Structures are given as C-alpha cells and as structure tokens.
Amino acid sequence: MAYLIVKLTVADYARWKPIFDADGVNRQDGGSKGGHLFRSADDPNEVIILLEWDLEQARHFSQHEALSAKMQAAGALSPPDFSFLKEIAQLSR
Image 1 (cartoon, helix red, strand yellow):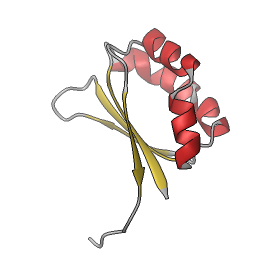
Image 2 (tube, one colour):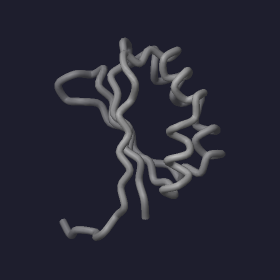
Image 3 (cartoon, one colour):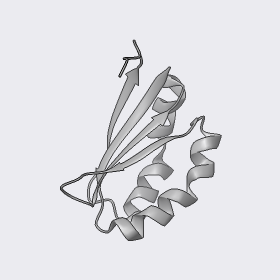
Image 4 (cartoon, one colour):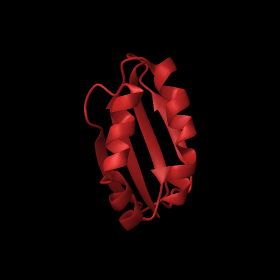
C-alpha cells in the first residue's frame, strides 16, 4: 500500500476546509482511496493530509498545475510539502 502525505500551512483553516472538501471528487478521480486530515495541536492553520493512493497516481496528481492553483486560491501560505510513502509493515498496538 502507498500513501501521500501533504503538509501545508493555510492562512485560515475555516476558509480552506470547504475548498478542500469540494475537491474530493478530483482526488477520487485521480486515484485517491481516501485518507485522514489532521491539524497541528500547536497551530490550527498547519494541516497534514494522509491519503491512501497508488504511488504513481499520487506522484502524477501532486504535479498537476491545477492543484497548486487551487491550494493558493484556498489560502495556502506556501507550496505544499509532499511525501510519498510505501507501507512496509503494520505495527501492533
């Protein structure tokens, strides 16, 4: 299984979140299998997104120019930081 982690800081989470939600169809069409959304415990405008994705589809999606434009329009303060991960083991609790 592969994952995409997106880390970004937004100007206003309340403004950013509905725009992110509305883009869910595009993520799904790009191959995303869903994921999790996190906010920093120390900075509510710092966002971490963990998405399950085919690795090559995730790389392609992250490089799409429309994605950068949407993030800027939604209030991202800088370009997002993308990390591509391959799961190697599941850990017990």
